[in-house]
Length: 268
Image (cartoon, rainbow, N blue to C red; front, top):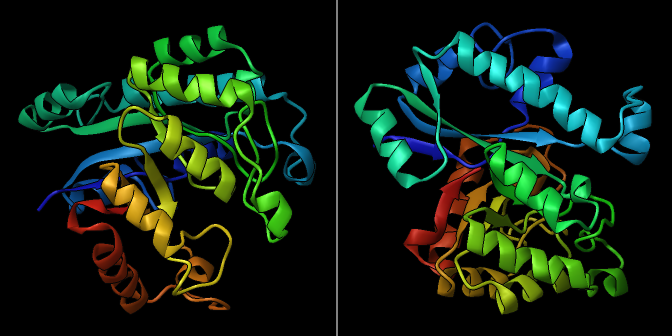
C-alpha cells in the first residue's frame, strides 16, 4: 500500500533553514519519502502571524511570507524533478506515479493571506494551491479558530468564509477544517458542496484537546465523504503525552474508523 500524507510543515522549515528537501534533517525529506514509497505528500506553507511571528523574528506580512516559501518550493521542485512532481488533481497523481515520481501538493495553513478577497483566493489557486486550512489559532477573514472557551468555540464562519468555501469547491481546492472552531466546522458541513478534510486532527474522545474532533464531527465528516488525517503530535494522540507512540496512532485510527467509517481514515 502506498500512502498519502495530508500535512507537514517541512517546506517552510526547509526554506527558513536554507536547506533543501533532499538533505533536510527533519521529519520528512525526499529520501524518507522514497524509502516509505510515498504516493503523494501535501506540503503546507504555514503562515506565521501575531506572537508566533514575533517569537520567530519574522517581519514579513502573510503575503510576503507565502511568496518567500513559495519561491523555495518551486526551486526544490526544479532541483529534484527526478523524484518529485507537482500535482493539481487526481489525474496528475496517477500520471506522476506511472512516471515513478512522488506527487507534491501545495497547501496553505491559515487562510489569513486571502484578506477577504476572492481575487486572492483565485490567485493562490493559479499558483497551485490545492488545499487551504481555513484558520490556524487566530481569527482571520474566513472565521475563528478552535478554543478552550466554549463561547468562542461556537463562533462560525464569517460571511466571506462561507463564500470562500463555495468557491473553493468550484475551483477544486480542498477545504481543511483542522484548527477551525466547532461552529466553523458545522458551517463548512452546511455550506460545502463537496467532501472536506481535517488534514491533521484526532479524536477528542481519546484526547481532550480542542483541536481534536468530537464523535459527532467524525460522524458528519464520514457522511460528507471527507477524511481525517491523524495528527502524529503527541498531545493530540494522548493528552499530556510528551512523545508519540505508534499504539496511540493505531488507537485513533480504529476509533475514527468506528465513528466516521473506514474510508474516512487518513494520515496527517
